[in-house]
Image (cartoon, rainbow, N blue to C red; front, side):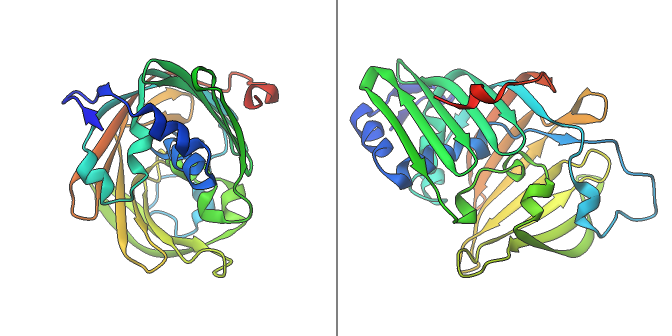
Length: 276
């Protein structure tokens, strides 16, 4: 894939991307855009000031965010660095221009943007993922089933939800400063180890409830990638959004970053927005 230094794409392999949509793995790969594409929210009112952040992850559940919309733009992408995360990582950065992102609790996402010169839509609704790419006559539905690691959750955007905690288990590890913020650090894994043995480490800011840093580990316990949620800003009462997300591989090479503007929260998105 040929990319420019500014993160734009000189030419996209249309047949390769079209073939990707025909497979369950490929549709999920584009679904990774939910991780990179809206690094978004930390919400609910700040916790009471205390000597030390809470050791209970339920105290960091996002409580005031029902839905949001935002505009995302790819800032940069390094294909070689991204391939060290996994071979499908780069598909998330083929979306170009101003990308419209809409999300509604629980686990409903819609992304509208361009791949090459053609409009494309990705929808995640529970365990179902829908892709619509009219220029190439692609209209597909994929059921990701019971595998928890393939679900798109609020943790992908830096938040903890009650629904996510229902099928995961969390272990408080320590309080650790990250860029001057005393964060609560947790190890999160899935309850059903027969389905998925991966885990992640999260650094949560008690004030904003944003996960400022997230490390993702493979089924074998190997560090795969690190996500940084940068420059969070308040966008509504008790609701914060990072200005951008940066993703690094396990060699600490930057794989890509995305920026977010025009954030609107609790706008009352209807359920039919998340259907094709």
